[in-house]
Length: 354
Image (cartoon, rainbow, N blue to C red; front, side):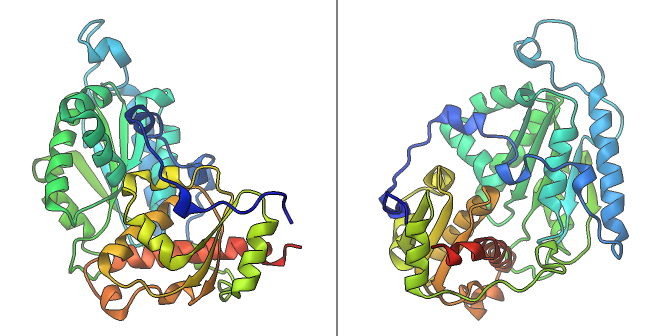
């Protein structure tokens, strides 16, 4: 047993200053060490190998781009930037969940020849949070000196935010910033990414000419050749593991869902700062779609940070109702199930703690 009692996510109400939002626009910890060379294409899916080839060439071409001359370029002095290379200044990775789109997007960020301060990586939600914290014009100024902006999980299901970010991207393209993105499907689209490219290019309207769409086929790599996730544990096992694991949190599932409703999703990453494992008792199906979507964001942040999740109650594949899994946000819910299952597998060893 550890000397200290487990932490509680419900006891945390984090504040995230705007400068932290900017500084944290880098690939999440899970993707610190990924590179194109560590992406393992499925031999049965040639589109995966082709995507790596195209993205490697795209990264190499950015060495000749207009972005990345830093403050001199941002404030309009210094030598004029070089002319941008011909061809699309953006790539869009189109594929279902679990085919490695985020791995490839992070690999592109790492491979781009620019110092970290001159390239940015974040989810669509994190980008809209940045605009909310800095204001539109300041966000344009902040990002215009960058060579590359990577946007993971571009949210096509919120028309207002889509217009906002599309306008922002237009300003950045004019400033010479290269773009790369993945996206979720629109509500009502049931093709697991099959229609995402057409939707994405239509929704960003005038920017579509700047993007080359790369289709990435394949099955969810998180379960490719791996054993099934462990079944839920008992409340006693979860509680014991939480007390035996330094830095673990312990919360009942229902109060945690209520707490998430009081914390803005932009703070869910900060909510998990310093947490080494999340232990949950009494997991049950989520009661409504708003709660479900908040849980999706938390699952994403835990997965980004490689925080194992040990739980009692229902299995994670029973979190969302059949109606949810057949609705417009089904891709998000399947992604959450996939990621929580992977984290539950990682947490298996905690249950045997003494």
